[in-house]
Image (cartoon, rainbow, N blue to C red; front, top):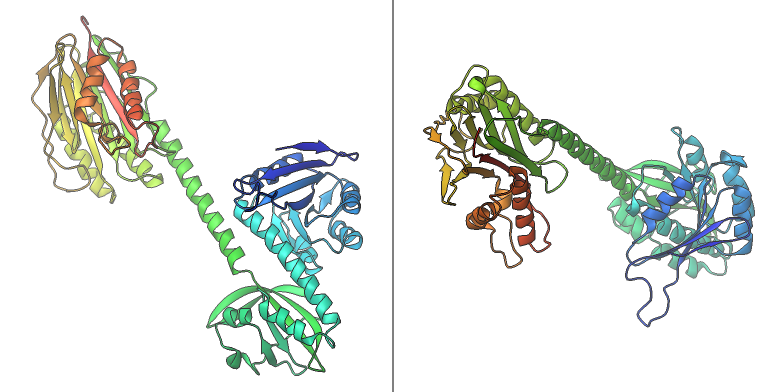
Length: 519
């Protein structure tokens, strides 16, 4: 990106799109010259950011923060299009556009508006502005499309106007322009009936030329006026920008109705709103989930305990928790909620709430998990949760566990590993599911309990090999002398390294419980 400063402090910015630096014969690609008359440096930077990296197009932006500076720029050089803010330090409202049109009618103008009331911008569009964009409500695709279409429409309109002025001598040329124009066009006689339609109009109305012929088409506008209207097409309303031009058609006075289809523009806006709603939901889900994760494990005499979640993207489906239980014991929980987004986040929150409430009256982990499953069905959730719930008893230096669709591992001080598994399906699948507690297992110094979600085991190398159970256990053995927190990090780093830079496709979570030499 290059920057220059001219004598009136207008900023020139050249944006080079990938692949558009040169044409097929090696010559530099012809840029689209854009004059941005906008007093907000932040809004200009946003426009510049949105135009960067546009495939197949190169833009050169000139920034003027006042109307007077913009007019001087227009007097010195040629621009393809102007982006105009109606509220400037030296001009405001519709007069801003009118002054620009008076001095440079040959340049297409797109209105930028930050007003809640867009009536002034709409009025400017009726007076000849090619388009208007509400600040903060357009993305890169809509901005680039508006720029390119405005230039194309302005050029086509200029060409059409010249042809209309010479209609008597160049009627054949006019007809050719109408036929080839991308906008729908209808020629309407003095009685208000259609006497000609171009192919674009036939597509717009989904009717043939013969079917449109002699159809009544009221023209509520005067010559040269334009407005947005809703037209019926096969029983459905189609949004168009209608402009009417007086013509001489085959020696008789008539009107040419130019119909610019706004359906794609409105659809783009609807898609943008849907995308913003999805992003908002993901953001809310991420906030809910982060609030559930404990900052650290509570101190437990004779044990070193840690856990972490590494989301694949904003809004994780993995969950871990440390829950104080009776007799100074500690519940250690790791789960994987199906799906992503706000629904999964809310199910995660409900699962945590159920477990924390149930341990107040239940000390058997199997009964806690069984009752949590029943409460999930009462809540009407259609998602499921895999869960591993272990109870660590520090006084007895022992533990037992209950698991639903999940498993963990117990590694002895010698490095021998035993799977901690169950046979029940995940929570939320069967309403009458009964999850049994495992027998109590005594722990010795050097023992390590490790539980991970499938984001570790199912990490995949470029040749599509899985990280797998054996590599997981080898990482724990290799780091057994480190803290539990360091082992958790080592598992994550090893799984990511195994993919050799590949995209993380699933959330990764792990809990490690180390038994220390002495309480």
